Amino acid sequence: MKIRIYYFSSTGNTKCGLLMLQNNLTLMGHNCELLTVEKEDTIRDDCDLLGFASPVYGGCPAKIVIDFIERSKRFTHKVPAFTVLCPCSSIGYWGSREVFMDVLASRNIQVIANLGFLGNPSHPIVLGSLKKASTFIKSLFDGIGRPDSTDAAEIRDFSEKLITIYQDYSNGKKIKKPRYSRQKRWVSKIVRSREIALINSSSMKVLQDKCVQCGICQKECPVGALSLNPYPEKDLSKCFHCQKCINVCPKHALFPNNILQIDYYKGKAHPNEEFPNQHTEIREKHRKKSMLLRILSTGTGMVIIMMMQGITNKILIQRANPER
Ligand SMILES: Cc1cc2nc3c(=O)[nH]c(=O)nc-3n(C[C@H](O)[C@H](O)[C@H](O)COP(=O)(O)O)c2cc1C
Ligand code: SF4
Ligand code: SF4
Image (cartoon, rainbow, N blue to C red; front, top):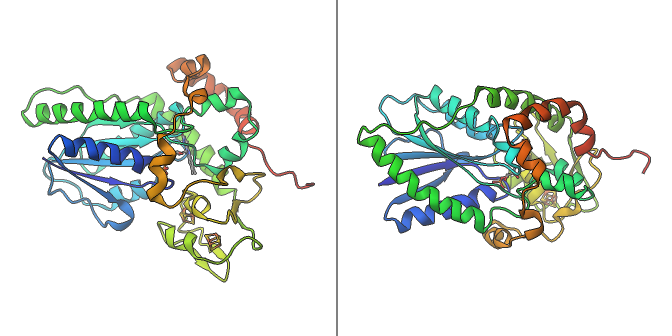
């Protein structure tokens, strides 16, 4: 069976999980191809099953993935699909699955299964805040140190289920519909607008004393939004705020403006080949889901989160103190 997965991964979490999935499917005798959306024009349907994978940005799959699906042709014959989402917190699944399914439905692509696994936070605003955050706040980011062996086991499980679901689907058997929650879709819309507004308000700062003008950030930007003049400059009309440039800079010379500290990045392994090491390490102290996180991951939690909306900015975001 031929499976083609289109994906985007900025800091490697999504890709790490996809490599596990690809490995499992290959061991099961299938041909699984991974293609990054940055290099593709349209979805090709010369396969049996399609996959779409993305990190979660502001309660939504990455804009680069959505844009790719939207610019692709509308399907006339049926190639079923599955989605893969990699947020940094269990709450990040909310609505992002629904947005993914909506966009695929607009191209007439039917989703038969969804996979989700957690990834290390990649958002500089969050990382800046996490550094000094309390254990409670850290526990909300249950993706710290992931994907790890827990995710590897779930991905293995999913690989087997996926093939069974596909076989039932293609034999005309009734399959269990993937869950779709209108309420979560609605929450996602609210979170997304807030999150995107926040990200947009944080323009990029270049520390010229650190930048060696190596051009790595420019080369790695998936949408060609950076130019060196002689220091990096950002074309905001192209940028979709994935923060890859900030994450890949070997000199830690890029920062979101007004964010106090992201020295979390120091010592982080690059380039991509090294990311599996980074992810296989299990950090036990962050692994256990707190009771609060369990509550927040439910419908009741959704109501609590909405009520907390007004104060979450203050809790999660540390703005730079201009006096310092
Ligand atoms: C701009 C931005 C916004 C993000 N928004 C969310 C979010 O709303 N929910 C969440 O759980 N994670 C969020 N994240 C974290 C990423 O989804 C997470 O770190 C993911 O694993 C990154 O995947 P990658 O390494 O494949 O790029 C955000 C990250 C960035 C850079
Ligand atoms: S990757 Fe960092 S050091 Fe290299 S050009 Fe970009 S900002 Fe400068
Ligand atoms: S400029 Fe940076 S944040 Fe914007 S799309 Fe390019 S890599 Fe991502």
